[in-house]
Length: 285
Image (cartoon, rainbow, N blue to C red; front, side, top):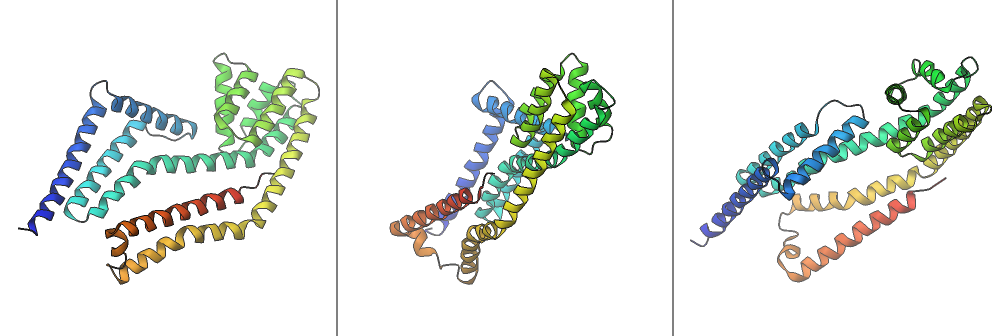
């Protein structure tokens, strides 16, 4: 009887977890509830992220796949191993992490191609006096994703927007200091006038020099970044290895108050060291 009680409590807890997820899903899909409002904000955020990255798909579809994966992880936690419940957190955060990573890659590629845009636009302005017409010509030969961003800018102008407002919208979408510098130079040149081609040439030279300095900084800090990865992964690898060798090795830390305190302090110090190391490695030019 004493051995049967923990098993019953285990399955009862898992069933309550499934019931809670089912009720949360029902509240998200039906009725005007805070969960439903959060669900709509979440899907809207996913839709905007996909739109900014020129990716197909919809936020509702991604959210539906997440719900299915979380349900499968919950079932696996009930019938296989309770540790499978932790995979639900991975399913919940994976789309945002992946879209954020793709967003950073998108911005880096745009920053690398900004010099090409400025040089091409400066050369095009030698034969075409209008900046808008010059952008239309340059867009045909630009690589992706810069070509896609310029096409979006031109579409905004075709539906009634001005070049100045379209440049401001592009800057607000991208939120990159390097891109803001180049777009500000284009915007000032369009508003003030003068030799816009020379301004763009000087801006392109400045961006190339900044790119060279960033490459030097990355090469000098590469060893520190490698040490940061070791600092983050090595304790986890050691704990997993000890757990595989002796499953009861960490039992005193899990079953006593002092062990819980020691574990919490060690985890706090580990996270603090990661944050401090990451802050040290962020070198601004």
